Amino acid sequence: MHKEPLALLPEILLLLGAVAALLAGSFLPRRRQWAARAGAAAALAASLAAAVVLAPGDDRTVYAGTYALDGATDAVRVIVPAAALAVLALASGRVRGDRRETEFCVLVLLGSLGAVLLAGASDLLLLAVAYLLASIPLYALAGWGRDARGAEAALKLYLLGVLLGITMLLGTAVLYGLGGATDYAALADGLPGAPKAALAVGTVALLAGPLFKAGAVPAHFWVPDAASGATVPAAAFLTTVPKIGALVALYRVLTVLPEQALQWRVLLAVLAVATMTLGNLAAFAQRDPLRLLGYSTVSQAGYLLMAVAVAGRAEALRSLLLYLAAYAVTNLGAFAVAAALPTSRTLEAYRGLGRRRPLLAAALTVCLLGLVGTPPTAVFMGKLTVFSATWDGGMAWLAVVAAVNTVASLFYYLRWIAPALSVGGPGPSPQGAGPSGGNGRQREATAVTAEPGRWAAGTAVAAASVTLVLGAGAGWVLGALSDALVR
Image (tube, rainbow, N blue to C red):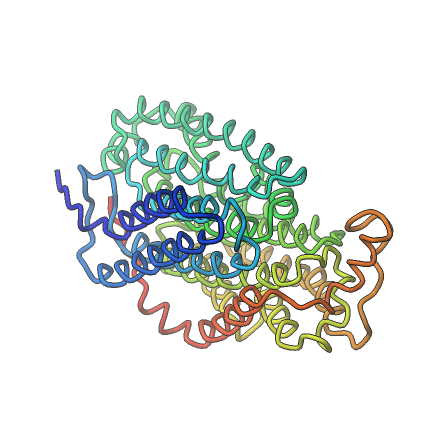
């Protein structure tokens, strides 16, 4: 049965950390809840260290072929805990002393565990369980702030997640009936002879779940509302960590499907174009920086889907993993700037940031230009490798469309960068934007003059530095990644 508990040590550490943090927070007084957060950070660091140690091991499946230990899982085991650590760091100022501080940490740990399990699942049933584990904590995380905006974001996320989760279960049942099994190895042998119409229905229904987690069209509606309605740390997690596990899960499950019977590459290419284009077009008119980042993450999902569309081709997996790592650190850096200036709820409110907070403005500029794909940032190298893999995979037209979208996206990122680097002071809040009333406009106008959160500001500067270092060392990182995929 290949039962190797120690092979799942990174996942076990995440689970134990969540349980320990929950128990500790249940007995600790409110002023000492930081101990649970410290324990959660220690569990994430231990999981990250265990993943690095276990990465050189043999590629194989464990527990009767239901969980894959290969290059893709090894990479996600490193990226997800690192991203979750960054979320805890940028959230420190917001959650410190809150009566629900422990809840936030536990939800981050469980959501991270779900993302890792999504990436490693090699069985449809485990994929469904991982989807639930990666989703349920996020519903609570979106509404963690317990305000009207957070409640609305949580409700939208929950309703769409449940609907598409049930749709995914329907696809699982159909594919099981067609292939006679749920593990990917047996499905790869049983699906080629299945009726094409039923196979198409099962595949589309199954993909609904991972596409929802990735924030891709047509399951993207929750993303901008969650980004602007949830607390900034929760939004940072929601738009980053689930996407990592979901895209690797998509890549893994699509390699099982018979390409000769179902043109799934064309379907994924069309979804990639729709996702990047809609995300960019919707971001053009946004004045709320968090909502802009929400639509930005939608467009980034479109670029990432390009690698999934050429799954199984040369360099596709490694380019996807590199892009995911680059996206995670860069996106979290941008959200960290927003977390450092929580009262800046319009782009105009960032005016004069470069003069008053030069390090924070530099971090924002690096992260936003990084999301565009400007050299020498990590996302530039991620996009370059994904575009190259897409071109070599026979979809040159998709690479061209993505390049046009990349150029177009520069517009709305510059709309944020321009006021931040201007020499003038902070401008007034536009009518109808941000908090209502004169007091809200006054808070908006003085946003960049207030003292930024130290942990969030430090996280932003660190993330901007990492994206530059990762971009410079992308060749070494790409060589260290493995394109092995087992089932």
